[in-house]
Length: 582
Image (tube, rainbow, N blue to C red; front, side, top):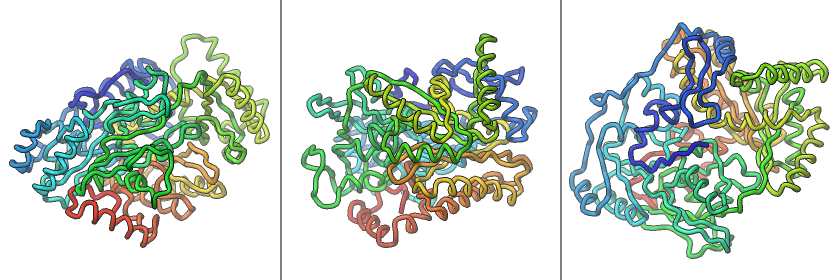
């Protein structure tokens, strides 16, 4: 994706302090009003996007005349002075643990990427931030930090890559103790690769893209590729029960993990051996995975690795409508022949993807594009405002991939699906990593938005998609949003018994007195609608503080009580006081 290591303890030097991703990469409209994506890191970098402006203005009813620029630099004097426990800081120094209360570093680690968090930073509003940042170098450093935190009753908040979208990193306003951000970024080493058992033992602070790149150099991969993998950490994946794009082949994080070491206020928790499966009571890994920083810090993880696949092939399929697309994905899941990744976009997302097409250098290719579009819409009776597209990624042995591809395209044909080429598929996956940068562009022009996800049984997929999108439109209208919102979804993962569905929604907030409040109410109602339609509270983003009001409903009163009693035993003084989940 990019060629960059964030091993530096000051990521704020190369990352935006009040937006997504790298400082040198962003969308903008140039003097001619053309869309552009800056920098050199991505395939889209340095390209002109001639259709973006028209799509943007038509979709949101905005005008490039009306700008809402972000505060360019952090005003350090707006950062509250740190509340330090001096003996704690002294003992850290003696133990040789790096620490800093530099204001930029504290602000950088005070938030994830929820809309309300970024919106406030763009306006230069700074809320409660950690009082101190500490950088352990290894497992033993973490043991020392946790011991000292217990001794001095300091609140610890683990910090990995900071890509959370659940308010998990926000400091609780009611927290009166000194808050310390425990930054795992310096614990980023691969400790060993075991080629006999195909496992790798890694420190939990490693960032996804660094882990994959280093394993690739030895001819291996984990195959775990969440959309955030450029910035998110292994420890964060474990703590949130993360899911990756290629889980059909490699599994989700719970399938990949063989062994976990975690430091809690009660001591270290880990299993005695690296056995592939055990029947030793309830699996303690399932107390750790999804614990979202409330019980302790994951320090080391052993996970499965696979030899790098010899062959990779992208693909895409156009369906006459969303229903046919979902039926095809259902059949692919039923036959258990899903490729490494299969994603189905609705019509709005298809048009959105089209708006991000870079300028074509030759007249010939754009002519061919036009021809293809003409062919699909005219001859095959596809309605441009109903058709939708699935993007595919196959990988493995060349022979098997080609067989597999034929099997999937044959199923698609039964549902009116037409193969639409490798390029469209590859573009779809390439856009995965730049799409997060688009929200910052929206916020430059009165547009706010967010993505959220759920998992749902197959027989409820269509109803849920339709009802949630309609509910978003209705709620926006009732709350005074002047222009119909962008309300769209895609099916991003298939399972035997259901699917993962992702929603994007955004709207033009001009004329609203309190846009954030309106946005939060709409998102809240959308989640209520998801739950009412048989969807889960979250498929992979986690709960954090944003969704914890629904936890009892999600896991039952007894279930919640079980989780609470684990918390009370492991962390009786609430040292890990981020107040997520419970």
